[in-house]
Length: 481
Ligand code: FAD
Image (cartoon, rainbow, N blue to C red):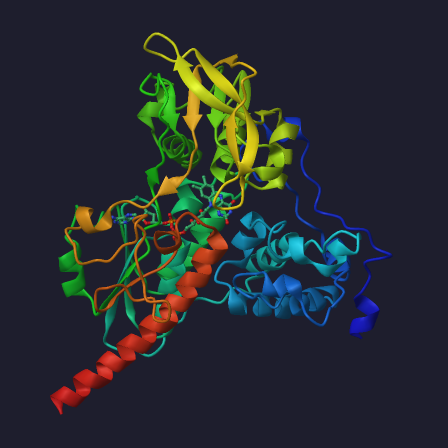
């Protein structure tokens, strides 16, 4: 049966779901792609070559059973496809939308290498799980038999939410603390709606709430309670706080008004999408409408800023990146989307100074060229003597990446071990920190990474915490006897 429906990659060309026309999608914050209809999802799934060693699975941090759920989709067995895809991922429809598939599963698809174009794995994954939500196939979260132990999870991003879900299934009482007023971490307040509509995140969080996980939103550990108190309150604690210290740039004019941080900008825009009052947006400081915008950086955050500014009605949007297109860290797909929507990329350029009396009015940039490879093997950018370039700018958005906050200091916990980058040190096998019963997962351990890795870490740390708590319960019982 499989041979009839699969291996169709020669007869069936690769086809992604249609994108809405660029000029229309630049007018709103809705996702840019349509969804597959059932026949085309099945046809596209049937292009999978079912290879003996599925490199897509190998290169997926969750090791999703991709060829198997593609086959089930091609055979029209959508519910089974969903169940299999859900078996390894707590948020398949979110990964389907925002994973950089061109670097992970699709980038390693065997038929991509044979010149036929990868199977459109991400779009099929999104289709399967969105269908499952619509058909009511998504089961409620049912907690296991109560174990009488409780866990505190600090951070409601994908790492914390995934761990919370698995731990609740094991039967623990789970409390999730987040300093934001809504759960989801960067899924809610970082990533814009045109990549991930907010109702997709909210329905996941609601399912966890209905499953008995207790959320303490607007609760900042280190401010609303001491970290030490939280440890007293719970049998084990998970730190899943992500990385939020924005990297800075040392150029003249950096303090001028109109020079802003990427995450402040994106958070304000996401809050507006929820209908919140955002004074700094309403006053115009964080609104790009009618402005000449220059974004500095070449990662996903920079791409998101560029495309948000276009949607807010900026007069012009330029993105400066010090290396060239081939050497940027962000997804090539996102660059293509931004270009279609009207952004201009000024490759091989880096800011020299932000010019203006009080408020920024232009950016002076150095032209750059790529020199010899540095210690990491990447060719290091250096200033090209060709002379500077000037461009108008009423708003400059700095998107240079993020480092970890200084948790031992902020939480009055000097005994919490961290690396020289400030990320939390964990034992590679147990994912426990230097503190007994305190675990860590996601970006706060890896440094700025990807949603799919946060989910993987959440899954792994839940299994490790379960093991630790079972051993603790057994030891307590022995002492009591
Ligand atoms: P986070 O999602 O950062 O969640 C951490 C949570 O901890 C936050 O809600 C925060 O409020 C909370 N917190 C922090 N400190 C405290 C405290 N003291 N007390 C209580 N709560 C606290 N990845 C992709 O795979 N695809 C993309 O397209 C993509 N786009 C991105 C776009 C942007 C703009 C950014 C910034 C990142 C993007 N990423 C993307 C990366 C991805 O979002 C992160 O790797 C992922 O969210 C990390 O998950 P996490 O759970 O570790 O942390």
